[in-house]
Image (cartoon, rainbow over the protein chains, first blue to last red):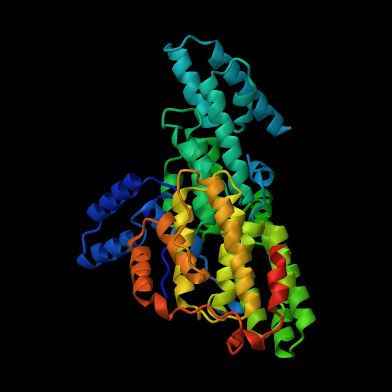
Length: 91
Length: 381
């Protein structure tokens, strides 16, 4: 199943104001020319169309792994965080 | 030694820049030179002659660089960085931070856009081949020792995690409860250090699995409380139990809200969202629960009403008196939530309320079979 991070998609957080979501929605709608794309966008918009719904999404969107092998894939494909010092050594 | 020379050069340019007259050709030239050659934003923050605005920007960049390269969750840094415009001396640093963040988020198109905004003559362009290499966009042909070291550290082998996963699979195959719980606890601790989100997902998976195998999840939940704090630990447990044991899940959702109610930053919208989840679950659960369950639920309701009254003094949280705690939860959801679905639920409840009998003596229900539940509930203490 395809999962969409709606906060990333709309560039908002759970406590963003409703007007920020509306603006983001209109911008994305303008950029999206296909009918299917717009329908999908409206569906996602409806899921988090008010601040309370955004909290509802935020509280419930995290899901467990279906199988432990998913953890393996997720971790192996994740780069390590090494802190600032090692990055700066390149300069 | 070379680094020292660069630092000295940065410091010297900064001194000259701060001494030059704003608007003069020298000021503009030095500004551009500083913007391109700045390898240490810390000098802007430390200098007493730097403007307050520039010092603040330098602090923002340093905080963001530290948070992003350490994988710390700090959404505020992104808001603060928005204030750093293209004209700023720190603009390329801002774009570098966002490029590294996009790399870790696997948003490689965004990473390309951010890297494209760093001037090819800037000192920071040295990070471009590294990020392109790490993301698989292009390989570095003649890799230097320093570049290799950095790349290896970012994508180094995680054989430890793989061996722990094998152990968990084995413990389930041979039905070894203690080994499963002990290994899962170790894994949680290890993941929490570097991988927050996978740690949460693993917590849900392990509690769910423990519940499915009839293992006691008590120790796992206790570990989650230590690692993630009570509010999140209760929420993850509630999510984990939702399919297999919705009635227990309901208690954990309530406990998560009680714990959250003690925080200053809880909003009415978040409270409403909690109640929507709670009332959705309450609607699904059989009302004829055993005495112990109903006592636990009633006790939690008493606490939650008290905390709600303290937190939201302007809202009357005295719903219609009823002996049925499930009804009370649905009534509360209409008081604190603005969502239409809660009112619909309440209307449905009103028309069928005569069927909702509250019989604490009924033992003929699915909870009787599981004697470990009181142990789980004791975690609320």
